[in-house]
Structures are given as C-alpha cells and as structure tokens.
Length: 178
Image (tube, rainbow, N blue to C red; front, side, top):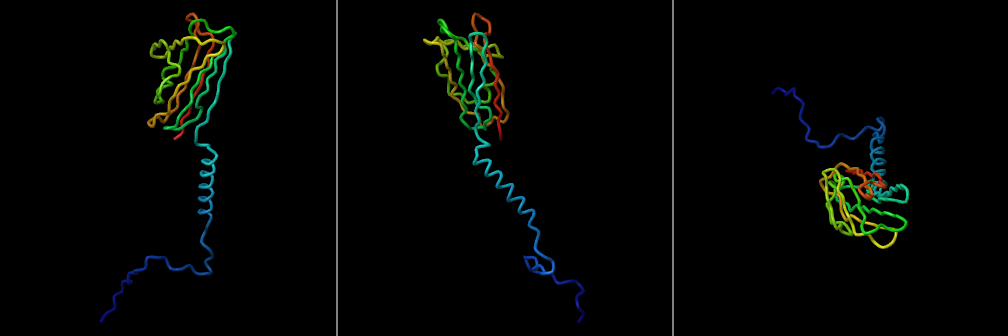
C-alpha cells in the first residue's frame, strides 16, 4: 500500500488554541467598538438625536413677530410651530401673515389654530388673514408632525402684512436628522 501524500482535511470548526508564548489576543478593536457604542447610547439618552426647538424674534417699529419652531427634528416626530405677533394698541379688524409655502412640505398637517378667515397662495408664499383678537398679542399654532418620508429640512420666513406691505418678518430653518 502506498500512502496518500495529500493532507487529511480537518473537521475542526474552531481555531486551535493559542500558544502561551504568542501572548493575549489584541483587544484594541473591541475596546474602540465598545466606546463608540457607549457614545451613541449616551447621546441618545441625552436626547441629542431628538427634537430641539428654537425661537426667533424680530422687531420693526412697533411690530414684533416671533416664531417658535423645531430647529432640529426627525421624521415622524411632532413639531411645534407657533407665531406670536405683538403690536401696542392692537391690530384693528384683522391681522395678515405671509409665510413661505415650501416650508410646510415636510409636514403632515393637523391644522392651524385659530383657522384663518381667508387664505391665498401665490406659489411662493401663503397669505393668511385672521380676525384680530382683543389686546396687543396674537398667536397662531400649526399642529403637525414631520412626514415619515421627509429626509431634508426646510427654511421659511413669516411676515406681518399691514396695508399690503410687510412690517416685520423673521426667518427660520428646520434641519432633519436621519
């Protein structure tokens, strides 16, 4: 009989044990991975990936307009958007706001509160007319959440319009995270 010169295939499924003189297996990669995972978990616990709001305010003469909005958000989250207008002496019979139309494309709308008595759009801006409240302060809220299909943010501008001209305006921007 002749012996077969081919090596016999091993049926082992594990690597053979390391020899003591080879030292311990490197653990640096595992430690880096563990620290990276810990950083992500801590950032989530501190709400760094959640909703962040901001308020921007501009004053022009006697008119002050403020927008409280979601500065940083993610798809599917409720997002605040409230405009507050202040004017000493009140507003007369009505108050008109002009808002960038495309800003609202990232939202699923539940409606405005209060609802405008009249609204128009020129394709760039929406113009909303409201019955003026008694007093020096008016506020309107937009009840909405970020569309699940939205992956990019949007910027906009809101302005108070009196006699066809803007008397105060302020810009704002919502950034969306994945």
